[in-house]
Image (cartoon, rainbow, N blue to C red; front, side, top):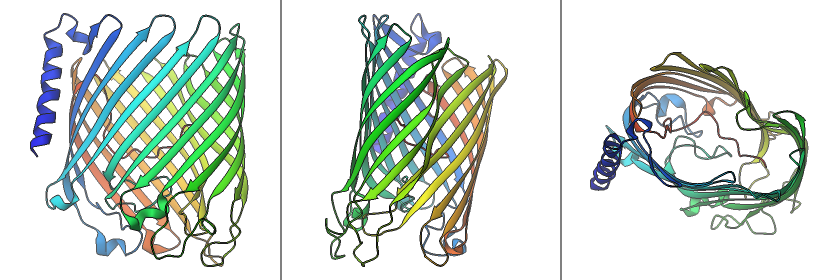
Length: 427
């Protein structure tokens, strides 16, 4: 608790320092090419189902409510390279404290490094690296231990190098690296590292719009196995894939931003059978990692997300599921000091087992919120989140209602914990 108070104190002092600067109205501190952007959010959440049924027992048995206090400090430092790009580093924290049962308390810390550089001769360099040290109840992409606090760390690296041909076309080489590592032996089925190499080409099709095509080769290696389960490198679910993606992307400042990204993937396992002798199933299917925002007016923005991936549930099983989702969001600023947000999302998880009646989960998510800007660097917000999982195996069902209020100081708006879904970025 002392550490939390110290973090809060430091961040509050930083935010208060902003108001004493000549440029305090921006909420940032600048010195030459350096910009420091601090932020602190305090959020109270009432959650009527903190364990989400956890997929092993009935929701009714495990349904328990609590009030959770989130302390979320954030700070970013940007070094601007005039007419070339920028180098940025950032830290985000989320410290959660439960009112009724402090055994549920957890902390998550995230560090980010990003580089965007364009040389005069046409060379392009880009890199995003996100390291997360997590001990929270939020599921990973494989839906593992949803609702239960689990300690782990993740590192996601996405790098590219390219060349710009007179601002009419661009060619790239890509390297992506993903790793997740769980602390406890019971969770070792989730420890893996992925390496992915790619080539890409894009061409300007409109003044601010590019069409692209990319091809990638990748592999996943499960580097630890649960003790005593008989899982080895000769029967785990290591796999390789090839994928092709095509779509559209936009220049900064265009009314459309993000990427329209669709593709096809060929997926193969390195081993023939799992630890129980069941045959692994290779899968070829379409994929997507689309996230597009349209600025309809200066006060209104609409967002669209389309996701599609095949997800292996662990190293010790042939089980996988096809994860297909769509989401819509709205940002509306009816007045200068008010912002209204709303989003809905639907994901369906189609499993390949059990053979006679494969599991299917329908996931519905909705969120609504309003924010009031007290000052340029200080705001208050309130919101509501609703989640439901409807499975053809009822033990996996749950519903969850969350009511939130928060106060945010500084310029970094982190928006709280537990986003509707977090697709991996595809370069």
